[in-house]
Length: 156
Image 1 (cartoon, rainbow, N blue to C red):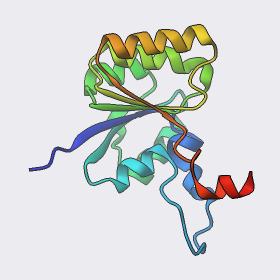
Image 2: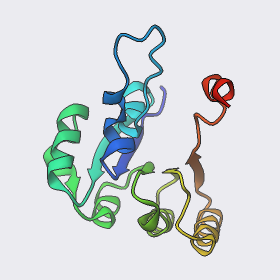
Image 3: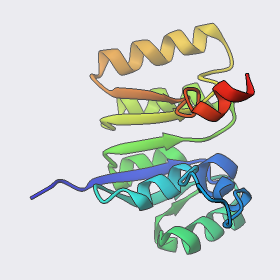
Protein backbone atom coordinates (compact mmCIF):
# COMPACT_ATOMS: atom_id res chain seq x y z
CA UNK A 1 0.00 0.00 0.00
CA UNK A 2 1.29 3.46 -0.95
CA UNK A 3 1.52 6.06 1.80
CA UNK A 4 -0.66 9.15 1.58
CA UNK A 5 1.15 12.19 2.97
CA UNK A 6 -0.93 14.72 4.90
CA UNK A 7 -0.22 18.24 3.64
CA UNK A 8 -1.13 21.63 5.08
CA UNK A 9 -0.93 25.07 3.50
CA UNK A 10 0.19 28.30 5.19
CA UNK A 11 -0.76 31.23 2.97
CA UNK A 12 -3.88 30.69 0.85
CA UNK A 13 -3.52 33.45 -1.74
CA UNK A 14 -2.09 33.42 -5.24
CA UNK A 15 0.75 30.88 -5.08
CA UNK A 16 -0.87 28.98 -2.25
CA UNK A 17 -4.15 28.30 -4.01
CA UNK A 18 -5.28 30.52 -6.88
CA UNK A 19 -2.58 31.21 -9.50
CA UNK A 20 -4.11 28.36 -11.52
CA UNK A 21 -7.04 30.71 -12.26
CA UNK A 22 -4.68 32.90 -14.30
CA UNK A 23 -3.74 30.23 -16.84
CA UNK A 24 -6.16 30.15 -19.79
CA UNK A 25 -7.92 26.79 -20.11
CA UNK A 26 -7.69 26.78 -23.89
CA UNK A 27 -3.89 26.60 -24.03
CA UNK A 28 -2.54 23.74 -26.14
CA UNK A 29 -0.18 22.83 -23.30
CA UNK A 30 -1.78 23.83 -20.00
CA UNK A 31 1.07 23.56 -17.49
CA UNK A 32 -0.94 22.77 -14.37
CA UNK A 33 -0.79 22.68 -11.49
CA UNK A 34 0.84 25.93 -10.45
CA UNK A 35 -0.42 26.50 -6.91
CA UNK A 36 0.64 24.49 -3.90
CA UNK A 37 -2.95 23.39 -3.21
CA UNK A 38 -3.51 22.27 -6.81
CA UNK A 39 -0.27 20.30 -6.68
CA UNK A 40 -1.41 18.39 -3.62
CA UNK A 41 -4.79 17.76 -5.23
CA UNK A 42 -3.16 16.47 -8.43
CA UNK A 43 -0.80 14.09 -6.64
CA UNK A 44 -2.33 10.79 -5.62
CA UNK A 45 0.18 10.46 -2.77
CA UNK A 46 -0.85 13.67 -0.98
CA UNK A 47 -4.00 14.96 0.68
CA UNK A 48 -4.47 18.63 1.55
CA UNK A 49 -5.91 18.32 5.05
CA UNK A 50 -5.72 21.88 6.46
CA UNK A 51 -4.97 25.49 5.62
CA UNK A 52 -3.95 28.63 7.44
CA UNK A 53 -4.27 32.31 6.60
CA UNK A 54 -5.04 35.48 8.53
CA UNK A 55 -7.91 36.19 6.10
CA UNK A 56 -10.85 33.88 6.74
CA UNK A 57 -12.54 34.83 3.46
CA UNK A 58 -9.52 33.59 1.50
CA UNK A 59 -9.48 30.33 3.49
CA UNK A 60 -13.17 29.78 2.76
CA UNK A 61 -12.48 30.03 -0.99
CA UNK A 62 -9.47 27.71 -0.67
CA UNK A 63 -11.52 25.22 1.33
CA UNK A 64 -14.33 25.22 -1.22
CA UNK A 65 -12.00 24.74 -4.17
CA UNK A 66 -9.75 22.10 -2.58
CA UNK A 67 -12.16 20.30 -0.24
CA UNK A 68 -10.59 21.49 3.03
CA UNK A 69 -13.34 21.38 5.69
CA UNK A 70 -13.99 24.61 7.58
CA UNK A 71 -13.05 23.01 10.91
CA UNK A 72 -9.53 22.67 9.47
CA UNK A 73 -9.12 26.35 8.62
CA UNK A 74 -6.74 28.13 11.00
CA UNK A 75 -5.84 31.79 11.44
CA UNK A 76 -2.81 30.67 13.48
CA UNK A 77 -0.45 28.35 11.61
CA UNK A 78 1.06 27.17 14.92
CA UNK A 79 -2.33 25.91 16.06
CA UNK A 80 -2.78 24.13 12.72
CA UNK A 81 0.61 22.41 12.90
CA UNK A 82 0.13 21.39 16.54
CA UNK A 83 -3.40 20.03 16.06
CA UNK A 84 -3.16 18.48 12.60
CA UNK A 85 0.45 17.18 12.71
CA UNK A 86 0.88 17.29 8.91
CA UNK A 87 3.67 15.41 7.16
CA UNK A 88 4.24 18.28 4.71
CA UNK A 89 3.73 22.03 5.09
CA UNK A 90 3.70 24.47 2.18
CA UNK A 91 4.66 28.01 3.10
CA UNK A 92 3.26 30.49 0.59
CA UNK A 93 3.36 33.61 2.76
CA UNK A 94 5.19 36.86 2.14
CA UNK A 95 8.98 36.54 2.64
CA UNK A 96 8.82 38.56 5.87
CA UNK A 97 6.85 35.78 7.62
CA UNK A 98 8.42 32.78 5.91
CA UNK A 99 11.37 32.10 8.25
CA UNK A 100 9.19 32.11 11.35
CA UNK A 101 6.76 29.60 9.81
CA UNK A 102 9.47 27.30 8.43
CA UNK A 103 11.39 27.23 11.71
CA UNK A 104 8.24 26.53 13.73
CA UNK A 105 7.21 23.71 11.38
CA UNK A 106 10.70 22.17 11.46
CA UNK A 107 10.77 22.27 15.25
CA UNK A 108 7.26 20.82 15.69
CA UNK A 109 7.29 17.53 13.82
CA UNK A 110 6.76 18.46 10.17
CA UNK A 111 8.92 16.14 8.04
CA UNK A 112 8.93 18.10 4.76
CA UNK A 113 8.54 21.79 3.94
CA UNK A 114 7.96 23.40 0.57
CA UNK A 115 8.57 27.16 0.81
CA UNK A 116 7.84 29.69 -1.86
CA UNK A 117 10.56 32.04 -3.09
CA UNK A 118 12.15 34.28 -1.92
CA UNK A 119 13.46 32.01 0.79
CA UNK A 120 13.48 34.69 3.50
CA UNK A 121 13.62 38.43 4.09
CA UNK A 122 17.29 38.39 5.14
CA UNK A 123 20.39 36.21 5.01
CA UNK A 124 20.21 35.79 8.79
CA UNK A 125 16.68 34.39 8.49
CA UNK A 126 17.74 32.09 5.66
CA UNK A 127 20.63 30.79 7.78
CA UNK A 128 18.25 30.17 10.71
CA UNK A 129 15.90 28.25 8.42
CA UNK A 130 18.72 26.05 7.13
CA UNK A 131 19.93 25.39 10.66
CA UNK A 132 16.41 24.42 11.84
CA UNK A 133 15.69 22.02 8.98
CA UNK A 134 19.13 20.40 9.18
CA UNK A 135 18.99 20.02 12.99
CA UNK A 136 15.56 18.39 12.77
CA UNK A 137 16.18 16.23 9.70
CA UNK A 138 13.46 17.95 7.68
CA UNK A 139 13.33 17.79 3.89
CA UNK A 140 13.25 21.36 2.56
CA UNK A 141 12.43 22.56 -0.94
CA UNK A 142 12.24 26.12 -2.17
CA UNK A 143 9.76 26.93 -4.92
CA UNK A 144 11.95 27.53 -7.93
CA UNK A 145 10.42 24.64 -9.87
CA UNK A 146 9.82 26.65 -13.07
CA UNK A 147 13.35 28.09 -13.14
CA UNK A 148 14.42 25.35 -15.59
CA UNK A 149 11.27 25.48 -17.73
CA UNK A 150 12.15 25.70 -21.45
CA UNK A 151 9.83 28.68 -21.86
CA UNK A 152 11.99 30.74 -19.51
CA UNK A 153 15.13 29.66 -21.39
CA UNK A 154 13.53 30.74 -24.67
CA UNK A 155 12.48 34.09 -23.24
CA UNK A 156 15.97 34.69 -21.79
